[in-house]
Amino acid sequence: LAEAVLQAWGYVTEENFLSGVFDRYRGRSYVGTLGFDSLVRLTGEALVEHAGSGNRAFQQADRRGELEVTSEACYGKLRRIPQSLSHGFLVESTQRLRAVLVKTASAVPRSLRKFEVLGVDGKKIKRAAKRLVAARKFQGSVLGGKALVALCLRTGLVVAMSSDLDGEAND
Image 1 (cartoon, one colour):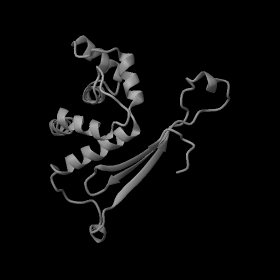
Image 2: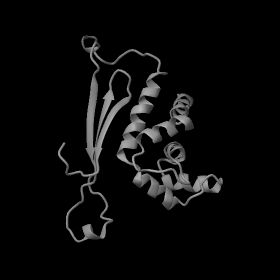
Image 3: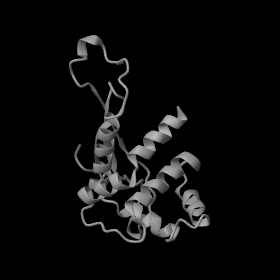
């Protein structure tokens, strides 16, 4: 199972595919020393090898001589990725995975199988850190961004995502 997951991740993060996704959804982003494909690879390493620690993944890549920028530059690039690129990567990688998925027995009741049944869940980031000097003088917690995700119950794949940096925005 682990091998299958890593193979699927490799298929979704192939360099030519990621370059195409970046070109279509990049907005005002540009390619510098650290490309989108490298950032996706480093993020995958952080999740799989370093228990979600980007810092450890960046340091390990630096020790191997694969990182030409500082860890701070990696975090800066992550911070500046436009939402359109995140959404585009999700949509196109899901479509790419659907092409190679094996059909399995559906968990959806037989009476609903002619429909595309989606599970929807949303989260707001609560108690965000008060890093901005202007926010530090106010009492109470800061509400960060929010995300809404749709999961196809037949395939188990996330098929859509909506996000907003303003956690106070209307749902």
